[in-house]
Length: 65
Picture 1: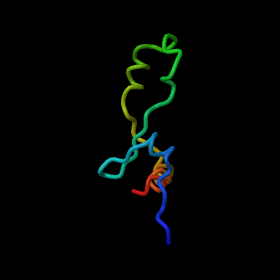
Picture 2: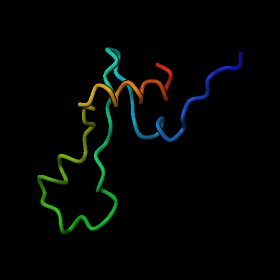
Picture 3: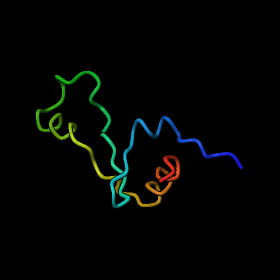
Picture 4: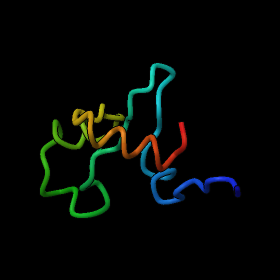
């Protein structure tokens, strides 16, 4: 049986912690930053935890972890 391939789109968007939690970067930071508040832009800098467990399971499957 052939090896499973990693979903490259998911690999670029998500990362999995050592405990198996899925992290992502929030969307909306590409352009038109002047219309967003400083607090909103600041909070977009960091990685966020993927809350929905059923969706996180699908992401881990795409990443084979």
